[in-house]
Every structure is written in structure tokens, then in C-alpha cells.
Amino acid sequence: MNKKGFLLLLAWLGVPIAFAGYVSLAYSWSLARGQLPFLGAHEKRWWIAFVIVLFAGTALVSLTSRQGTVRRLVLGLLYLVAMAVILFCAHLGVACGHGDCL
Image 1: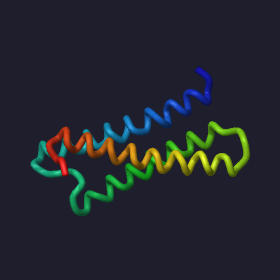
Image 2: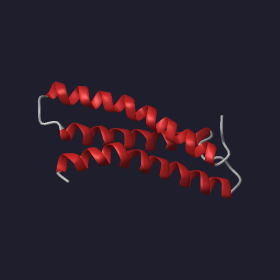
Image 3: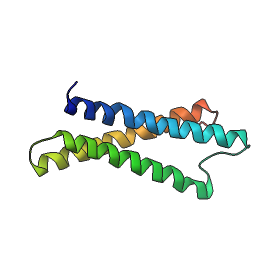
Image 4: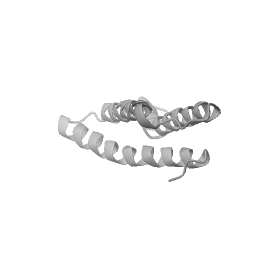
């Protein structure tokens, strides 16, 4: 596999898997203590993790384009929107798996 393919694979598969893993661990640890992981002041931890993985993936996608700045920005923006939806869905899936469905 070439470098571009690896970066895209990491951006499209690694980012949601890492985020779902984080959410799953947070639920497991919190539920073991009788709490929910992302309530009140603890919600900022979710947002921090969300932003970090989202922008890491955006950077990976932007690195795959060798063409101009405009193309990189467009690809990054498209990835950002699509991955935000995917990450929210991953969170909902993990939360429902731990009994915290909306």
C-alpha cells in the first residue's frame, strides 16, 4: 500500500475506530462507578476528543492531495462534514450499546 492509501485508510477507518474506542472506554469506566461519562462538566472531555480526532483526520486527508491549496481546503471541508456525522453516529451506537439510548 502506498503512502496516500495508508493516510486515507487511517483517516476514514482509524479516526472513527479510535473515537468509538474512546467513547466505549469512557462508558465502561463510568458505568462501573454508577455514572454516565459525558454529563455536566465531563462533556468537555467528549468535545475535546471529538475535535482532536476530527482535525487529525482532516489533516491526514489534506496531506493526500498534492494539488493546490483550494483543493486541499475543499477536500478537508468535505471530510470534516462527513466525518462529524460519522463520529456522532459512532457515539450514538456505542452509547446505545451501553444502554444510554436517546
